[in-house]
Image (tube, rainbow, N blue to C red; front, side, top):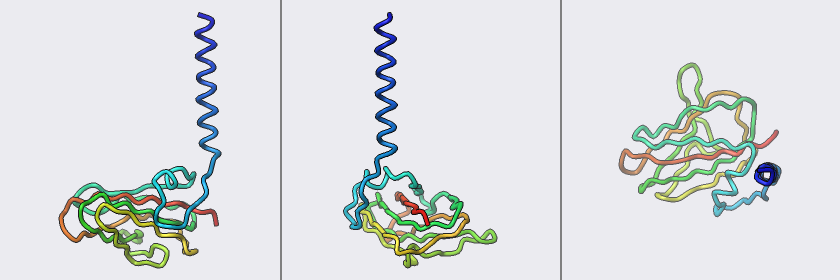
Length: 149
């Protein structure tokens, strides 16, 4: 019984060390469009928002402070989509730019990385809105990496 308890404690300690190492490790950022999923999801200040229904509209999300952001958009649908970032103002959704772009087209079953060009986003509620070249079954995910200003 004593060996079992010691073994259990060692396993738990190794697991905690492994999780701490993953939290501290920050991979080198890449600035081209061939960034893998793991390069995006391991950052500390990453948020995801997406849509997988016929509306084309993602869930709303909050930006709590002024931030500089890059966007990684994955289109899982079998048709091209055009995505817009929108900010809520007075119960109305207004188009906002994504690092200088009013909309971004992502090919079917592809992805696109929009690097930060210094554009900043102010505190508020945002969402994404997509339109497609065909069909009503949207399936996309946008991952946003926030940078400290």
